[in-house]
Length: 282
Image (tube, rainbow, N blue to C red; front, side, top):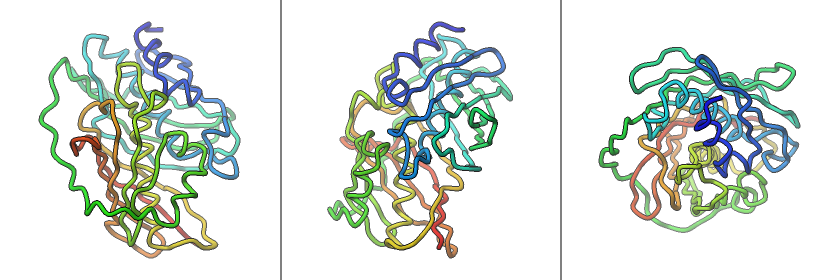
């Protein structure tokens, strides 16, 4: 097992906080094991969608870093697509990344997330880039919003969610298809090289997407799930407070396409963006 990859997982506070363990890494595959923990779950012991995201990007990075080599960083996820197939309810999961193609600085991978008994939870397509020491281009500014404060009716509910509150995520604004969430810097969201772990940043993006949809429907006797997320990370997430801006881009009855930007709170620099497909139905 490649020592620098093993150390990266073991020394990333976010990975250890969630309970991730690098089970294997080789030239063709890498696997992250994650035992069930109520701190990672929604009510009813269903794992939060951000857990599958986090395990997937960690497995993909482990494989890409191993294949590309220790001198090819810093690394970030160029493109990420996850489809959720089933809920993991009180179950251990494993994310296994398989190499599809390696280039000079890019690795293309497929990731399967399963329970220990083989039930399919999610599948992903991920491309990870090794920057070969190149500085990031000047980041664009997030579009931002009006700056109004109105946490809305879901603020207390997300504060009571163990996984979301564990990330420090809080609602600043939620109304009429628009949301703003903040995630203050905390060590438990960090990765070994100093910034925010991509899994934590994508969990913020995921949560913002869900909240956009709920801002339209309001509370009721509904069921809800995230069928799919597509996102790009423009550069390794920085160490600092993050803010997510979300808008419902399109609605087709129970289906919502929510456009999300994640930026550094202090500067407004955009470093992640994506679309969260969310479903709320009765």
